[in-house]
Image (tube, rainbow, N blue to C red; front, side):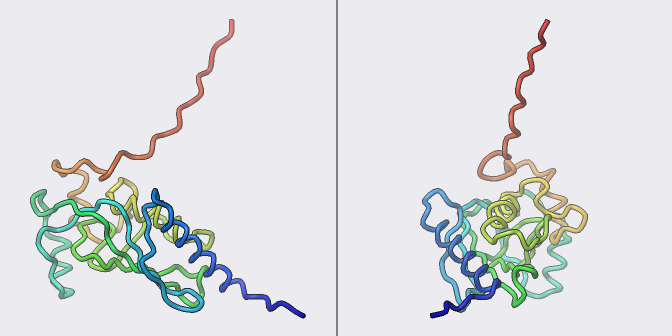
Length: 191
């Protein structure tokens, strides 16, 4: 009796789904898999347990309105802190060689790397990344407005990129401090 060998892309998709399921069961995880679709797995709806900045007033739906809003000066009173955004992940046919598509489902996110439903990470995609790694190491820092988490040269939302470093209302990054650098070992001089 021969066992049918699954192709590598199918195994990789099953592994991704398993990682997301395990993270959802872990109470300390900041990622919740709400639903998934496809056989093999090709779409997921994720809840990210983290604070983020949002526009107090809804953004316009038209492309022209979005472009204008992304270039208009932003003020501290135009933004508020909210929690737990929803994001959809779509795996392309050539996954993991091709990057997954990330769609922000939560409206009105005020972030230099997010505009409307588009998400842009500073590190991009490598086939060695997992979806869970991208969420925890790139998306969560981006949502918290951690410096260096968005492409400073080409931000999706230029008004947020100009505003974030100079704003006075919010302690950035949201929800905690930046990861602490490892302490250097003390070196004793002998003699």
